Image (cartoon, rainbow over all chains, first blue to last red; front, side, top):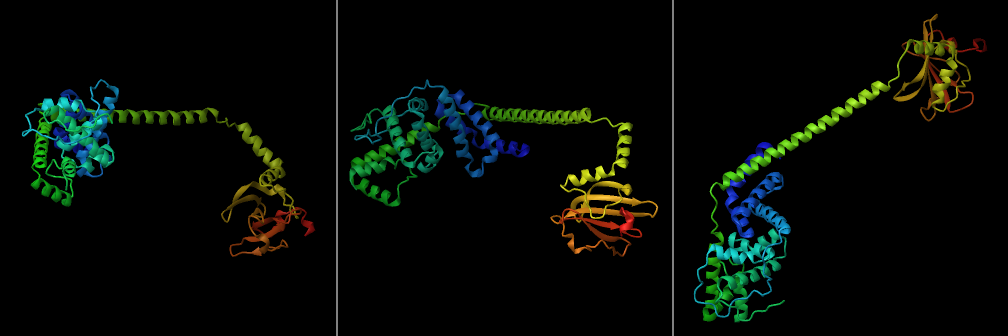
Length: 175
Length: 244
């Protein structure tokens, strides 16, 4: 850790990315307290590993990756998370309602909380960060096809929860 | 394009920055223009995506969050430096203790030098010059046996010394009466090819008054006693001068 460079570097990172990192942590964990803890842990780890950030332009995905690892580490020791099995194949509804009903951030969070982390993370990054499939695949260290598949399933789950009227016509369950 | 393909592509077409290729996007657009059902479906999908994206970002940022995060990393940095400083101090203490211990051990185990020992050694060197020579040459696997024996009563020093960059046994003789000195390098052919030097024991005059001679070993053909000396002649440093 270089004293001055590290202090300036991490301060700049906090100022630029703390809101995005907090929101990402919130959507991952579903809790404001956990989100703040995760953001703090991510910045502290980033400070210690600042020398490994070769490309400053990639600071944001780098920080997201650190935060996700911190979250996964916590999640392993906290198995009480409620999750539904995601067996439905992602598909579009046959007869969508004319309008998408209103739903708020809390309803969305409840639906997100039901997703296993491996499905929750890509859907958050997809909507929240406008990340491409390739970026998400890189972030999660997964093949791009797996990301597309998980994203489709996760979106189906969100649609089921948030727009119940938009039932999928022929759902394949129990893979 | 049929409806199934269109719906599959539409799954990845929910956002403006579609990841469809331009060709697929154009084909999908063409299909949507002619298929109201699929068009409604894509319209719904886009609206749903927009609504989810909007809700996804609607996370209020707690007041004072940035300050707390900055305080947190500063505290972590302080802890890191403290740990680092403690580690450096601990290492320095270990090094100091180790060095001090080694020095103390060396001091405590160093043999005591006494006058009696010094006198005894000096006496022994004078009384047993042949033993000193045998010890020095013996350490190199050489037995002292020159064809013409040196007068060991003139021996001042027996040890090893440099000869053109190599350590070889050296015998140093002093003849006080004639103010003459002789250095005898005992060399093997594996050390130096001394055979180019005069083999008959005759001397070779030098510019500064030094002379050089070689005396062969009586038992080993590869061992020679190379003598660099001053004074009237080599005979001054040899026994049995009448033999010359």
